[in-house]
Image 1: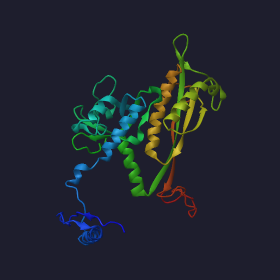
Image 2: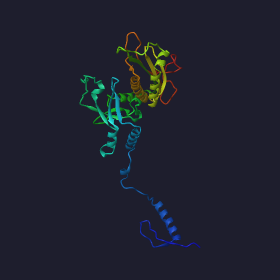
Image 3: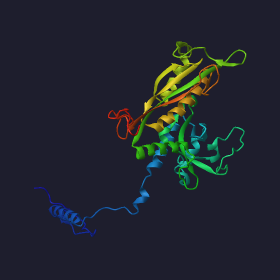
Image 4: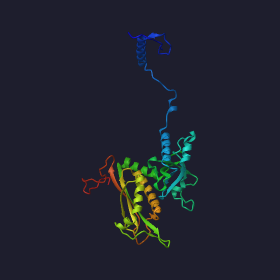
Length: 344
């Protein structure tokens, strides 16, 4: 027969009870559990909010560590003004990392830089303030990054860039001058007011120039549309460009020569994520410019460089569909004699 040990136990109020046998202890444990269930006793932690971990704070820490592990030293916080100029400021990653360890700046990536609102009116290189109603060089807008757009730049491998929205420094409200915010408002209005969503593709045309022996910039060839000359002679450039776009997760559908001498077209794949496509266009143009420079050439996106040759286009192809449908053309209605819907 197994020995019946004596065990000291406590009641539900924590008072030490006299020593009891094993059987008695088991019975008292069952009774205590039943009483706790009946009273719905539960554990509690004083001031639980003190122990909450900010998801945003943790994400920012992870982003900084990941970029550092990838060899990144700098982050560019960028926005695009009304004249299609990228405005950005660079912050050393080490500075952001040190700020993260202070209670005053535990979210160093949230509002890292600011920029004068006058820049959104196309501040010229002369630094003279343009005449723009209601805009002042004294007012600044804070740039808040959209981390879905974060890319490490293959042509500047120690640097990452992220696209931002511009906000009022005091109220933190989205600025009406913010082009990224404008695109978001257009997409929201189309969806909520018109019941329309978009798929968009983009075609980027550019000319390649190289300096001749006399120091004059000339097209790299005299080819025409769909010709193999540019593709053959610029194979290394095209291969490098494709690799660097792929590293930035920018899908390429097609590359071909265009009508003007030394002209190429890069076709970005259709996308239902319009904001991401807009980011892809910005990053792709930057990549084209820098890869061309790496290969001793200059990429030109100007609409017209000569009255005798074709110019550069930046073509956008839109497909309009009913909200929630990936196949229903919002502008088509076979029941109408014209074949066009009321929305069309």
